[in-house]
Amino acid sequence: MVAFFGRCRHALFGISDAETRIELRGFKVGDDRVKARIERIGKSFVEGYHAALLDNDPLRLTEHLNAIDDNELRGFLFEGAAMGLVISDFLCPWRPSRFQAFLTGPAQHHAYMLHVGAGWALARLPVSPASLTSRMDCLLRWLVLDGYGFHEGYFHWPDSIGRQQRPSCLQGYEKRAFDQGLGRSLWFVMGADPERIVSALQDFPTDRQGDLWSGVGLAGAYAGGVEPDDLERLKVLAGDFLAHLAQGAAFAAKARQRAGNPADHTKLACRIFCNLSAEHAAQLTDDALRKVPADNALPAYEHWRQRIRRHFI
Image (cartoon, rainbow, N blue to C red):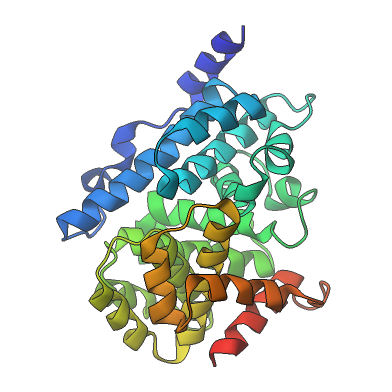
């Protein structure tokens, strides 16, 4: 019976591997190595997503994902699995949440990526952001909107990046968190090319650019795929937004540290963007979180980000 319902979910909500191909997406990728990296990340996400659709038991799912022999890409597997579990929860609202059981149980070390993955589901389900995030951690719930922004950039970049559109359902700080994810998508859509990224980013209103730069920094440090010279060039082009770029890289370092899947390209990006080791960049995010102000005119999440940025100013 479990297998039957899993196959039904997969048939209804599955994503074709073709959806991760650069040619279909229309991404502006000129380097074959970058192309291979971007497509491999996309396939890892889809693999985790399909695994969750086929078997949404949190323990079995975690064992399956951990058995895949690619630790550096494992975060993308768990991100995709989170999307699948949120969709499963939507289909069976009377049942205890599989996503929450996954998040608070065997997959808790991937908490950052799980919240981001939930944002992909938000983009595909007829639900409001608040209805999905209201029972989530008050700090990390904003990563759901980040995931939503990435999804829209990845799948609908002509609208989200070309026309700079945001969903009309977003309110207040939700718009900023969305832009942080949209900034991450620029790394993929523009083929990790510094000049292309900056050209697209500078077309946005100035008050959106800081959050976009933060997303670029996170993607550059977490996803990687480029040479040191490319990172150095991006650092120079960031100009007044360098602190935002560095803050994003620090978040990437913390996500990998918590999940136990370090990567050489994350260490490199932290050294270039932050002038810190990945370990020190991750520690900075922990230090900035101590006694962070509660939600007020700005959410605690933004106070946290501001504290990190101040270190780099």
